Every structure is written in structure tokens, then in C-alpha cells.
Length: 124
Image (cartoon, rainbow, N blue to C red; front, side, top):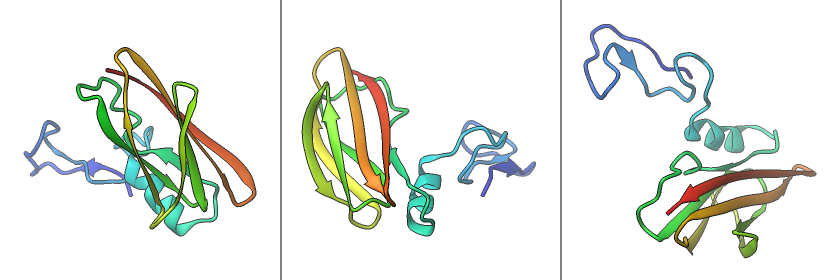
């Protein structure tokens, strides 16, 4: 579940740490995979932009992935609806093109009777 100390480990940029958990070592940040499993294994209304932390973009063309246990997800880019797609295997995917500057991405859905949303600002 959590990243943990592993003195013998010398891989990547975090020596002495096994960072393959669903939550960071300090228990402060849930990783994307955490939300996939929460979508798959619970009825807790869940919706998460997978790439939300990748805020500095270098390519205009991208695919946005959303983990959710809703039936469908709607995505908005800069105030305009990109589309609504069915969730398959707890994932919705939206191809889109970002504009130069700040792009506001908002995903919304109804999951187990509740409206859920997630949003991010990405700069191209």
C-alpha cells in the first residue's frame, strides 16, 4: 500500500526507498494507481485525472485519462465540453489538443449518486 524504507535499494532517485506503493512514504500523497484501485474495489464515488500533476506540457496533442467508477465521464477544456465517454475498465480516455498558455481541464461524473469532479491547470 505505502512506499517503504529498503536500505539495500539503490534504484531511481530515491536511494533506500521502495517507491512502488499506492501512497507515498510519508502517507501524504495518493498516487494515480491508488485511485484506479479505489475505482475498481470500492463504491466510494471516485474520479481522478491521471496526469493531473504533469503541469508543464511540451506537446499540444495529448490523451487525458480519468479513473472513475462512474458509468461515464465528461471532460471540459478551457470551459468547453470536449465530450462525454463511457468508462471502460474504470478508465475514460479523451484525446485533445492544448492551446499555448494555461489550459484548464475539468472532469465530472455522477458516481454512486454523487457528483464528483477533478481539475488541473496545464501549461503548454
